[in-house]
Image 1 (cartoon, one colour):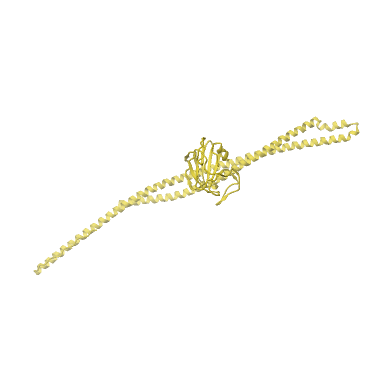
Image 2 (cartoon, rainbow, N blue to C red):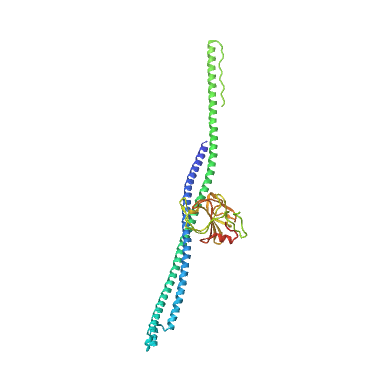
Length: 402
């Protein structure tokens, strides 16, 4: 019995140690998950800034191209003026004019007019050259600004992606350790319960044996007492010469629609019409989350709880909360192409990170988490680090949206 108690105590101590470990791991999981969500939000901001910088770079490049065109036109015009000056004698034009007008006072007015025209031509030539130089410098400056802005944002975006990957890895490691410890805890709990049951059985048997031995001992004592009393009574009767009978002792007790796959292997990610297009829009706020002023996606009005389908075969690279996206799934399809699915309802995931999916497979259900007004699917297409307009991309692959 002492061994049973010792084994039970050892198992109980192991269970307590595992429970303490699980509590620490749960806290670690919460910390790493919070860090992953923070990194995800930072990545979202970096991606937004990168996309904005890309658009600004395109705008600046357009300005630079326009400035270069102006510079080229100004340079051409300046060349034409220079040729005209050369043909009229250049800086010797005034001498030629005086020689031509010498001896004829009647041509004085004509001489002055020619001198005035020459002066204006020289002045205009100078202005055109300066304008050409300024336009060229402006084009170069704008182009340099565009390249610097885009390079800086790309550096920030890549750093944010690396931070997110590290945070995700830490969260997954903590979750894996927690799952392993919880499984070990269940096993130890089962062992402990078995030992407790065995100890209870042993204790009950021991206590029953003790009670039985006590009953037997009490019966023995009672029988001895009865014999002694009977002997004493017989002796007394013999002394008095009279017979009698003695007493006797007693006995003891007992105790389609969305999900349809085209010939190219691409599927419409959800049913419903297009409720929001790719491009500028008003800022949307919900529960403290506010969207940007440029919508890098296409919204499909699905209704709450409607199925969301994988647009193409691939591997899930994100399945969790992500800032203004709310609950979000991202799938990599290879060839530098990915798709994103935002505003998934709470508890609406059908996939997890690292899982392979096929085109048209149900991956989640629609909701309104994050910066959303009403249930819908926010659908994105990524080429490398840039989000592009999903409508023409999907139409080219035989899976038209809306």
